[in-house]
View 1 (spheres, rainbow, N blue to C red):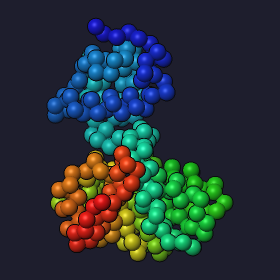
View 2 (view 1 turned 120 degrees about the horizontal axis):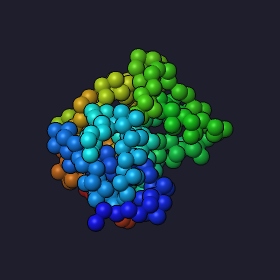
View 3 (view 1 turned 90 degrees about the vertical axis):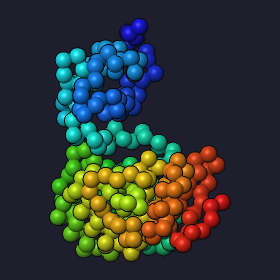
View 4 (view 1 turned 45 degrees about the horizontal axis):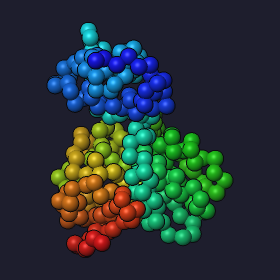
Length: 289
């Protein structure tokens, strides 16, 4: 039976709207074959919300260029391959916090400069550093700059460049020159894919070039990604794994993929979600505890 429960009375009500929009985009991508439309009633059935709710959501997603509504349904657009940052925040938040806290331990005491890229996991690294003193943070993420820029104990520098609407990252030649002009001790960057086959990759080639400049300008580069990105290859290469010093992820990744990444060069650090602990895979084949 088609549910008619008002949105406010459903578990995926107003407070969970971003979660529902992400679910709708994923369903459209998974259920649609070769960008074929998915029916409105199929979405209603999968999400257990009202027809009116799904129609409103699809109208909003279409206005953002993420879906195309069809007669009785909708299909995704190419832009929906990369879910906008405003809809990504709720994905595995606790796992991302654990990854970020582990990565933040790499900083030495005393004055230090770091570069932090875009993405929700990299943003968590910035949040883990807000109580540090004598720290300079160079970032091309507008969301990160807005969140930590008011901290009196931090010096926050923002690159120039062009803003990507889906991620609110600043990219392009000006951003690249900003990263190249300054020396940073550690670069923390997120990615859409990390694998032995493809190295560090992302969906957008301009973003990839900007992130490559960030890596080149740092003494140490640390990739922070949740396990869904491990073993994955996306469109644009950022860096070979030989140019990466550390990869920090969670224990949802396949062991074979982690071992392959380790053999390519980086140290692999795995945070354990259940025990709230972490282990390292040392360069050259160390043990996990």
